[in-house]
Length: 278
Image (tube, rainbow, N blue to C red):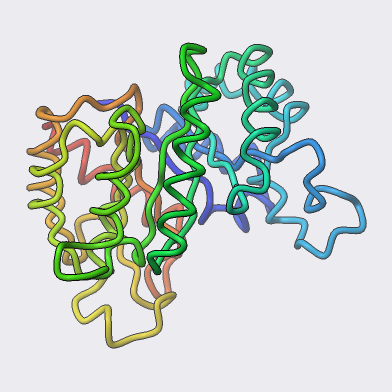
């Protein structure tokens, strides 16, 4: 089973020892990573940016990607996809054109974005953005999928959640990178959703939370995969019925379990998943 790792939660460890942390991921058994894409004019990468330097370790522009790819390959790691930040409608045309050029020059063709919609107005804006991106990229072999957080799975009305409305009104070929941990955090039934929308899911991000997670601060609620209340084994059992992209299964843990180190949690979670071998 191929298993990828989201880099968001590893920013601090990467800032301390970038290539040592990457080697840890390879040694654990991960075969791909998902960094954040930095647009050419991204102010976060400028020398005088207030963004902490360690955060910049997970923001990769074209220059970084071209520099990193050969060494990652030597370690047995690929870039499965890149997470892209879009404002509501503001950057979709120019942003997609930049992604198309980047894909042509690097060979990375899969991108994911998050818009965190929790009102119908925001949901409609997200629908317009994603449909526009699909229109621009159609036929190019480059795709932009959607990565959820918890708020998209809050109830929108009696007919369902904001995510239900989003999926109903976006092009059926726009895939969902389903973060089942955030979905559970939002109060939604993970297994029922996966069974209802198997054709829309192209990637599954795993994160786990402790029992009683809703009663503690969010950053204190994380658990290593297999240690929390996510029905991980049942999620894995559903994967054969879903057409995942290569490295479509990833651990994407934002914070370590309280008192732990994230790379240790990732090792524990990966061992749990790979041991299941489903």
